[in-house]
Length: 216
Image 1: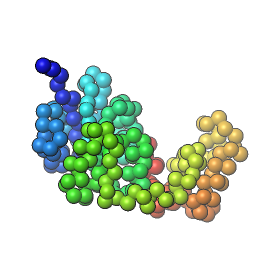
Image 2: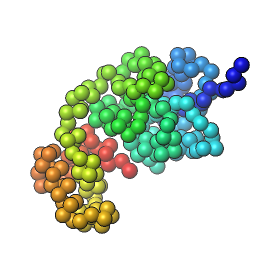
Image 3: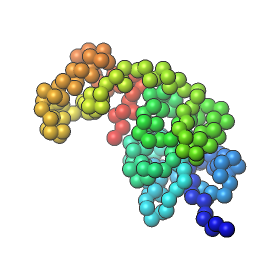
Image 4: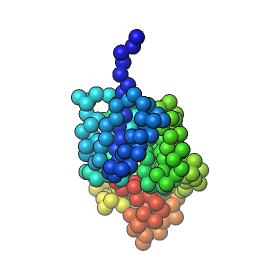
């Protein structure tokens, strides 16, 4: 007989009532024998992912929690510590662009808190099977048509860095590229996005629902 114990399941949310609801779903509908650990801040979660705490089998992650890192910066920090951990993002942020970005970064699933309860259960079931899960109540197909995705990675990185306040000269020095190369990335990106010279880049990102790209 196998004596292997189920891997712990992590529930990260800054609202205690929500943590208890998610824990109840896990116990009653997902994995009744797995030990559950709860975290109310991003910093506590990252401590719980340190190697000496042992492996985990699944993480339910709210992206809007108190702590040094938030939103996609928190997701990146989690993935840096546990790159193979199946993650179900369970958040109030219903931005299709956010969902696409989170899945692209390495989250296995994404469910919006305003969706029917059954969607959360389906999300857990899919993620445990290592299958990607997109909340069907979020229009991800429409998000995929956004001009942001027509940019190359270098162009997106340049726009984000400039929106954070860096200059072309600073970026060229940091990245070991010429001024002309960085300027070309900016020019090409703004042309594709239809941004005029007098439009602040941070304002553009916020207006398009892309402010999460500024998380660091």
